[in-house]
Image 1: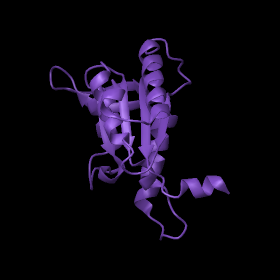
Image 2: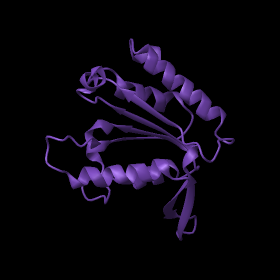
Image 3: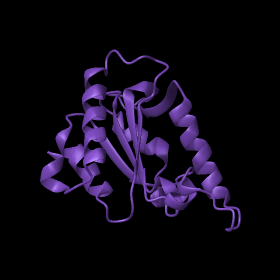
Image 4: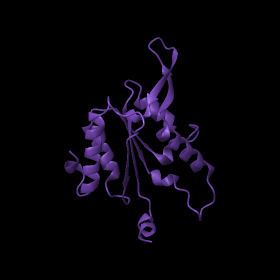
Length: 171
């Protein structure tokens, strides 16, 4: 499926395909201490976003995509990670969450401190590092309910360009 849309990027396509197969196969038997995470790194224009569309179309699992610049920890500047998690798990408590442009949360030493990035990093680490997350929603009778989402039932896929990473790794 990936080969029809994205040319090249064989390692990324193989990693995605393997991650999806293993995640779908083990969704009911996932170990509570293991949270599936995949990180795709590549320059702008390398096909990461196209691959996310392939994953969305190829997998029978619920899928949500969000780009870091459009996120907010308070929903003031955009949707929060929790709102994406709520949307993802509204019908069934598992699925795939693709978070693009994750490199935008990287705090660079030569740029003034950005509290927004710190808050987003803390929130993201809190979700990925948690065993469960409480998600508020509405039940059939419009009553407020809280659902405990098992985070090992969410496949997190992060992607970003990480400009300059090649120079750092070369050192």
